[in-house]
Each structure stands twice: as C-alpha cells, then as structure tokens.
Image 1: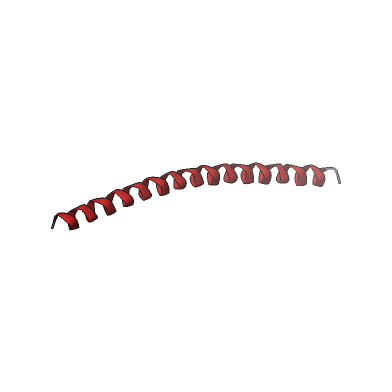
Image 2: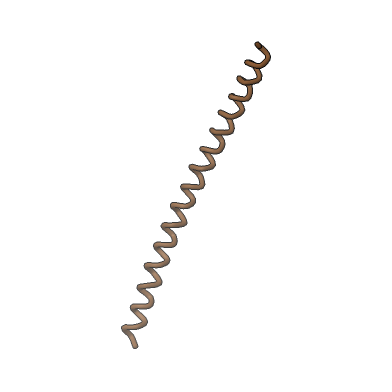
Amino acid sequence: MTTRADELTHHNHRLADQLQRVASENAALNNSLTSLHNDLATGSTSLRRTIRAENTTR
C-alpha cells in the first residue's frame, strides 16, 4: 500500500512540474501572439494609409 502511495505521489509531482512548464510556455506563446497581433494591426493601418495617400494623389 505504501509503495502505491509513493508511486502516486511521485506521479503527482511529475504532473505538477509538467503543468508548471506548460503554463509557462502558454504564457510565453500568448505574449508572442499579442505581439504578432499588434504588429499585424500596425502593418494593416500603415498599408491603409499608403493606399489612401496613393489614391488621393491620382
């Protein structure tokens, strides 16, 4: 019985460590996604301005 409890405790610790790593990776990916979204929005705005400026000079 003690051996099984030790196995489960060890497994629980491994899962907790894995959860912490995955949560950290998730946070980093979310930060990257936010940054990419901001870059895309900036590029889109810049492109619209360029197109408008080009259309008004014609």
